[in-house]
Structures are given as C-alpha cells and as structure tokens.
Length: 393
Image (cartoon, rainbow, N blue to C red; front, top):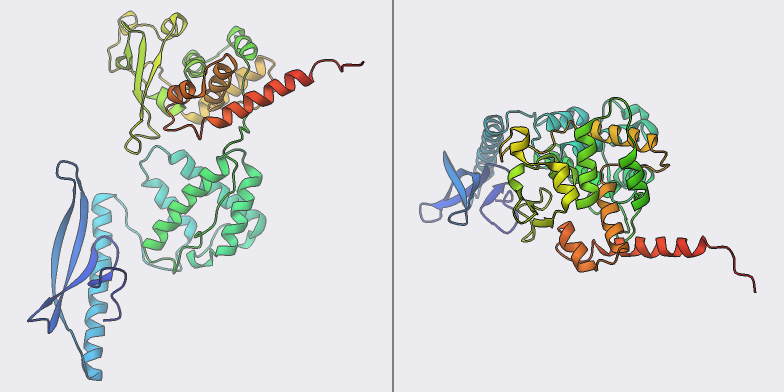
C-alpha cells in the first residue's frame, strides 16, 4: 500500500474528506472509507467528524500481478470518489466548485477564491492578486492573463517577494505575501500544484522600524482646524477618534455605543485582528471630555446601544477622504488610515507615557511590536536637536 503517507499509516489521500483504510477479516483486507472534518465543538474541545463507507475492499498483501493491479484500480476509484465528494462538500458549504485541472488558469482560480472569501482581510487578498498581476506584466508579460498553476515556480516567488518589497513600505509587503501564500496553499490542497512554490520564501522586514509617516500634535490640530466643502463628517470624526485612541480601521468601523461605559468614561472592545488568537484581545481605553463629545450619546441621536457610532463607507473611500483632507491642511505627508494608530503611539510616548502603558492601549500582547515606536520617538528627538543652529565655539 504505497499510497499511504505521513504519520497516519492508514491515510491514503488527504483533503476533506480524507480517504482512509481500516483492516477487516483479521487483517487480510482493508475497507476503504471517507472521513469528513465537519468543524469544532467548543463545548467538548473536540473535532466533529463524519465517516462514509465506500463499500470498497482491497487485499492487504497482494502477491500476483493481477492482485496488485486490482488493488491499484480500486484505490484509484476510491480517489475519484473522494475528489467528487470533496467538490460536493465545498459546493454545499462554501458555494463554489473547482475543477481538478492543472491546465486551469491560476488567475481564474484566484478570482473564484476571492468571490467566495468571507473574512475581513478580503481587501488584502485582493491587493495580493493585483500585485501578482502587476508583477507578471513586468517580468512575465506572456503570462499576465493566463498562467498554469505549475508554471508558478519557487524562483518566480522569490522574485515576486523582492518585487513586493519595492512596491510597499513597512510590513505591507510581508502582509501581501502572506495572503498570496494562503491562496497558493489552497491551490496545492486541491491537487492543482505538485508542491508549494512559496515554501521558504519570505519578505525580510525590520518590524522594529516605523516606516510610515506620523502626524505630530501640531499637525493633528491643523487637521482638526481644516474644513472644506463636501467633507465627510463621519470619516472626519472617526479618523480623529483613531488619532486619540490608536484604534484600527476594522475596529472603529464596527464600534457601537454599547462598547462605551459612559459612567466610568471607558471604551472596551475586542480587537478584530487578534480575536480568537490572543488572550489579550480585549482593550480598554479611558475617554476624555473631547472624545466623549465627539461620539456623543446614543439617546441624543435617537439610536440604541447596538447602533454603529461611525457609519463609514469602504476603507478605500475613507483613505481617499483622509488624503484629500491632509492635502487641504497643507501637510506634505503620505497619510493612510493606519497612520492614525502610529501617530497616537508616537505622540503619547513623546508626552512621557511608558512603553507598557502604550502596549496596553494598543492591545499588544507583548512589547516587541511597541518598541518600534520608542525608536521613532528617539529619531524625532535626534531630528529636533539637529534642527538647532550649529554651535560655533
């Protein structure tokens, strides 16, 4: 039984469902069956599985050529059934169906993946697709519209990682590559690639260096004082709120009045990014008079605790509004929404907050990701000293 692999000697082919065997008739034969992974039971702490018998049997120790051929044919039949069941399972659970065809256009596969993707990092998954297409146009123009899965090689992925680092700053390249890898791994799991071409490929990023622009307190005040025709009030208020709380866009977009304890002037929420992955996913932030005035009370606007505080459009639309606003304020910096979080951290450190307090307010589980802000503050201090007139003795 050369088809079995991995630590489980009874596994014939991986996937969902998996194709497995079990001994019958005192070990003289194997019965072939499928095992479905249906989910996870949080009450019992166990995986939920379902088995399906295929009513197919193979000899445990075939001796003759004919017996071995019969075993081979039966296993091939079982594999075909497994694949067909997997497609049915995906169609019922996820709403799509993929062909196990290595001549399939990887770009079509990726688009189908996007159409059925329902997690909150969908924007980044789309960006990864667009970056890959741009990369193909530059380095492999003949493949820019059609590329077979197996045409994506390890060397190509190394070059793609280098390309990403020329297009993005900070951890952007690393995040984009992670999303692309997710799609490739799924492609491999569907049998459309012989092996993972992204294995060992990395974007080298110094995550202790803050590469994005930050707004100083003077620039923030200038931004607040700047108004212009047809400005978007909700976007404006939400961005200011992030500048003074360090919240991410995904969290402020879903922020509801029920998250604020008005009596104790305290905002509490669970970070979307670390939900289910960290024991410190909940963050509590004290709110001052200005922030409480900014959000208001639900009863003042005829809303309830479950209503959104800021009814925001898409991330892309919000970023365009912020860029327009920054330009109107005469600030010559490239400011994205996430720069509000960076600005908050740098400014409170500049004002004397200790690193543990900043880490707690940002919802970091440790100090590693917070330390880059202390380095940014040190750089600002150095620049301030260097801005003084030269000392001549």
